Image (cartoon, rainbow, N blue to C red):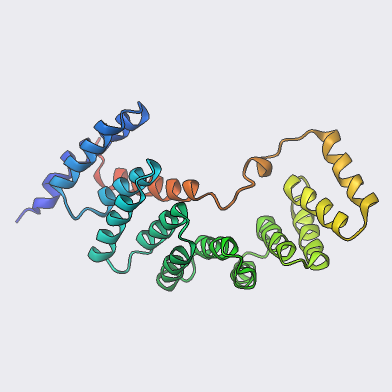
Length: 249
């Protein structure tokens, strides 16, 4: 006996493809209408709900976006992605405490997902709960000790707490792991200034001015970008959708 949902998949895929084309052309009303048409075919599709939720969040319609994630959670209470995106949307609204609750729930479901722990750490930082943020970052460091961005993030958090001596050590380690990590060099210069070591700080800033190297790290300084976080989840879902529903060659 054939699966009725399977027979709907090509139509849903076509609607989503057309919606993305309209979105790229900035025809947002048409894109949203096509997503809703896809939902009318498969109301319980996690991929379509995720697509709509991210799209609505990008348009600033956060309350409507949250309804999509709530529906996803209702359909699958074990969906860490739904909790993560719900948390990201709360962050966009400035509801940081609600966001951290969502990220914590997502971590319960996927304890080995370090991206979720970073989301939670950043949420705690926005609430100025620096000790709790530091705990999250240290948990990540135990798993990813060679990631310079983690050392950098811990250094920034320690700096937020006024512990400049300890921060300096983490910036040094970040630079040892990645010598051209300009953000870490700038942060080190900052804490050196705070510690009264202004000559050393000047050496770092002069070196950066000489190289005039706009590193990839500078462009990615805001590692907490929620839009990027949502977009990565969205793109991952689109790849999964494509792999599952692509027509045979």
